[in-house]
Image 1 (cartoon, one colour):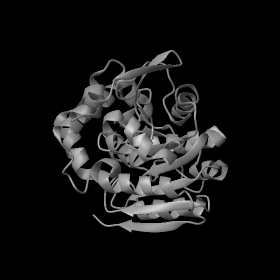
Image 2 (spheres, helix red, strand yellow):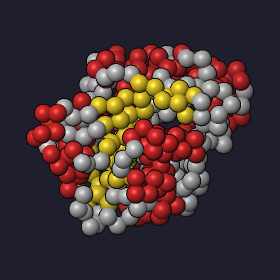
Image 3 (cartoon, one colour):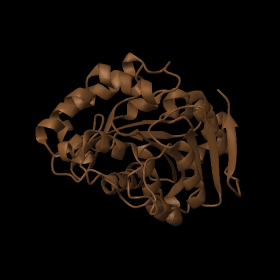
Image 4 (cartoon, one colour):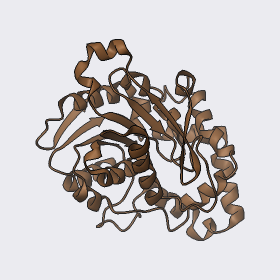
Length: 316
């Protein structure tokens, strides 16, 4: 079942455009049992490319038993507006997340992000200062200064396969977009990036397909897949600016990223007080192995006392 069915849909405006968001809080009974959590941080969950708040369907019900949990659809995705003329990319989503924390949550917040949302979480975490109670990255996107720009990213590999010149052709762009939003293509793509395909169900396919039918979705696709790419600030610069505690959650069998190489780069540049949890999963561990991700996140939130990078292996 979609998490939308269990939680009221709310709306917030950023730059004059509607942003879809969800929030859930512990019951009063839970607060009475978990008194120390009542004054704890809020959580804000950020989806990856093509996804939405629906992708946190197995996380929000569990995490909100102990914490105030929010999730938003980044502009251009999900149920949020997809206006023409916006410069879609890291800078836009970074500012959107900062504004949401300051305007709607109004308290220290742990920002959790997957893939593209991971980049937005890290970037926003650096800007929020003391308002960032922590940052959690699940197979986060982005590049380092010593990379050859984004040449190693899944998006760059996509461009290489299709051909940068072809992607400039409006007809080719439209054909690619139409193919990518077909239910069969969505399911095949998910099957490539989920190692355990149990949760690759009709609800998930529809959650990705439905927003692609919205007016403006094609323009968002063209903007994000422009050959210049929405690169944003390098990850090493963001890590150097980050003051909040950091948790790295890795689906180590992610076919879209060189997970081993990415992990090495992340640990080389991440702050010393960083925790790493390695999972036997693909690109979206929060939906593929949600019980393990929820457990790891709750344990990390409960401790927040790590002095150095530590690696934890959670077996499926």
